[in-house]
Amino acid sequence: MFVCVADARGFTAAAVIMGVSKSAISHAVRQLEKRAGVRLFNRTTRSVGLTEAGEAFYRKVAPLVRELKTAFTDLEQVAATPSGTLRLTMSRSAYVMFLEPMLPKFLAAYPEINLDIAIESRLVDIVNDGYDAGIRVNKILEQDMVTVPLGADIRMAVVASPDYIARCGIPQVPTDLLLHDCIRYNSAVTGAYERWQFSRDGQDVDVDTKGRISSNDGMTMLNAALQGCGFAYFYDRYVADHLSDGRLVRVLQDWSPQRSLSLYYFNRTAMPQKLRVFIDFLKQHEG
Image (cartoon, rainbow, N blue to C red):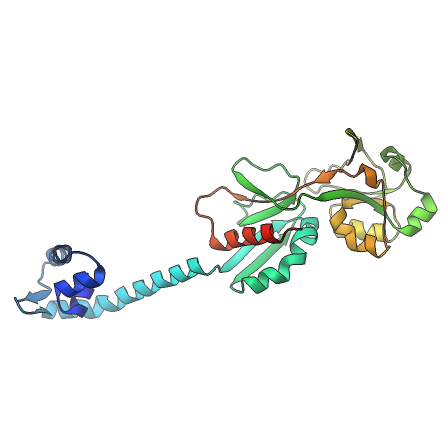
């Protein structure tokens, strides 16, 4: 208010500029003069001018006030234009199935947003590890996490190379897999092998498969399947290209259970604009 009065050369004009009453301006300046212990303005019935002390004070504080206004303007622009680095964590399969296909469109739509994508098989504590959000398939999350369903039409697929099928045959029911080499997922966190789940006509079957190759990395498992090392268990979208070009063959399709994909983030009231537009974009373009 002091700077505005000095610039406008009057209390009435300053009150109009700041959208407050003249008495509010006068009271604020009196309180400032009382705190400083010196008179800052010479007041007459016709004019208002800075005293010598007021002039010296004005030269120091006016640039600071203008910098502060610029800083607030910049904040408003950030709020209006989504920007900054969005840190995301997800499994490789979630990235390949869902985010990778729409990545170019998102970057084109929001040129001020950078993406930092961490591919990890473990379920990450996004708060402690500094992530804005994560994407996972059928994971149990903490209660203080908000989940946003993304892709619901995801099914599991048992696949093998044509060479392996020619050598070892086709399983007719899930338990036939016990007679085959299976490429198993081994959790780096728990050390346990993932059981392959199947469902048909209300009947659920879990198979504790056996095999000579296991890994906690989807790409390693996929390459092993492509090389004819056995059957592997993937999300159907993850191997869609390999199925379409014949490099992999799908079996037990009528036993394929359905899975869901979700984005999760910490339950907070002030969601960053960059995360809000990212969620809206994913929901708009899913599938």
